[in-house]
Image 1 (cartoon, one colour):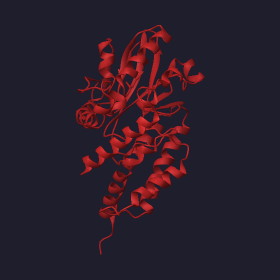
Image 2: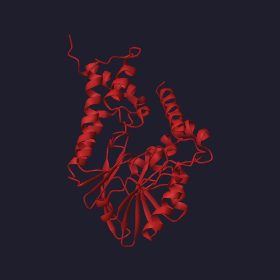
Image 3: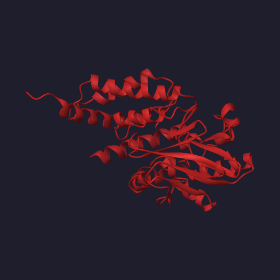
Image 4: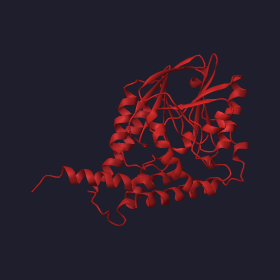
Length: 316
């Protein structure tokens, strides 16, 4: 039943994307894909490529080192991954040598094999890599026919840097790769370099959170772990970068989701219309946030909070 609900949510998400930009529309020609790059990031050699809406406005960041370029995440559409790497190599005059996948969702890993074909090493943690096959298979059922031929028909090949937080050297850079637990996905990596923190979809920046798994309490722990790194620059999976205020805004958003669910006294089975009412409330409270369809995972939060309430209720 859970997988069926997820399939329906993903189908709705794909439908929403088709309204945002049909594949025959070339918005990329009219929109600068590096438009979200900030001047202070650029001075540090950090840039961002943002996909067309058909690819969910997905961010791929780059860090320019003395000996090459490192990418953070590999895009939802392989065509956008290719466009990103070609643009970045033209801008920097250097080859992309490494890409890091932050968590097991297709907007992070779908472009991996396109990059590998160009000689780019694509890495992630052992924990993230272990979750990729199941996620990739589920996403193919939701997206492959809609996006073909611009969607992978097989699992990506990813190298593991190990199961522990580590320092990785590439392109003349030293990157701290932090291995974190569940949040919006079942496993995460965040990359820290020179005061910059790349957190992917663990960060909320003018878009709604992808609540598919319902692990909001664990997600809040991830926010505290990122805050403990004291970053000066914070970079999300979609939406604009900023400073530590993005961590504050993410924390406030997730706490508000929990408060709304808990104030509704969640029980199982879910009362008809209860989750939809909460979804509408969250959208109303954030009228400028993109991708309200991501809130189709709110029923998972309801279930997790209902189970928690049932196990913590005092015995009579």
